[in-house]
Length: 237
Image 1 (cartoon, rainbow, N blue to C red):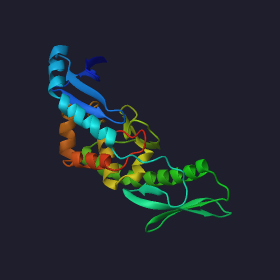
Image 2 (cartoon, rainbow, N blue to C red):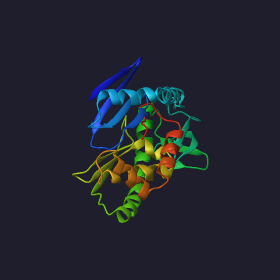
Image 3 (spheres, helix red, strand yellow):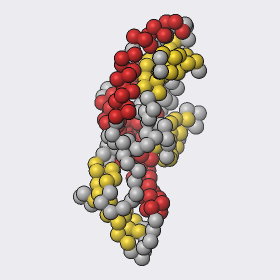
Image 4 (cartoon, one colour):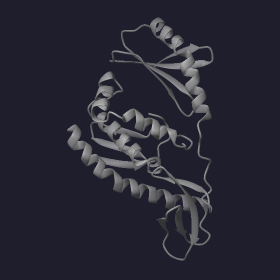
């Protein structure tokens, strides 16, 4: 990977088998990346980057000012998100196995007396994981039929820099646990995104064409995903 320096802005340059240049700015630090056709020299890429400096600075400012969730303490009346909605956490101590119940405006977290923050977080995370494990298979099945691809396996894990990943050889996709907190259409968008990678490895022009074909409103869903409060480490697609 080559790097281009413009004042105090460092740009990662990645050359690929693509036809056009693609510019992106990524949270959480505002890192800038240009994907460029292999045939282009650095002078041409530099001129392109200079022409986009105002756009880069604008998006870096937006990322810096983006609303972020404060670190959670898992205490009563703390805000937590599920499927795009905000709920207040209600801690209920009881001498029985832990459980989570969703109410109209609250998430009731049943824990044993003296359970600490880490234990409460672990219980809630497992509840989020269970939801994603139930919500994902019908979506994969739906898009397998539409796209003519096969997903052999999916998994849920915490990821600091991505919403999802795809292993083309194993036909396996991984989803970020944080997606349980986002609107359902955002989960579906990420699933489609990763399944399209089974047809096209990189974010090439062909990848964009396939996304436009299968999910014409994918940019809307992407923006919707990034509009909601993000936790530290969340990434934009």
